[in-house]
Image 1 (cartoon, rainbow, N blue to C red):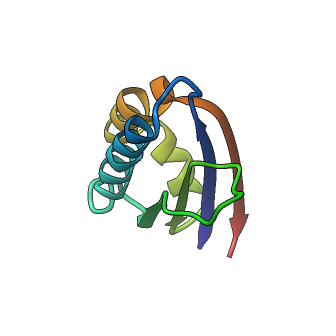
Image 2 (image 1 turned 120 degrees about the vertical axis):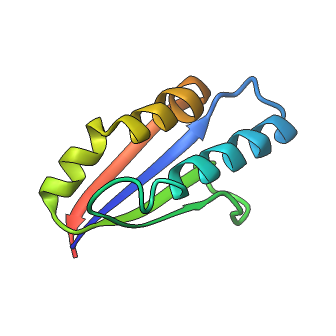
Length: 100
């Protein structure tokens, strides 16, 4: 299994209400990919956090193997969510992939 973890900071110009709406959209979009993208075993998006955190949204996902993770990055359903809900709203992205 391969774990794919991403942390995002949303754009500074968003109000807290706008950040919440964006985070909910990201969660709905990315978690909805399970069952659509071959090899994507699980996806959990978290945006409720403790005070002092520097990230606004986290994706914690699991793939069957590295090939499945590579295919996910170009899968049309993932690209639609990334281009529609994530990239336009994010100022910083940090990721880590590892074998579990």
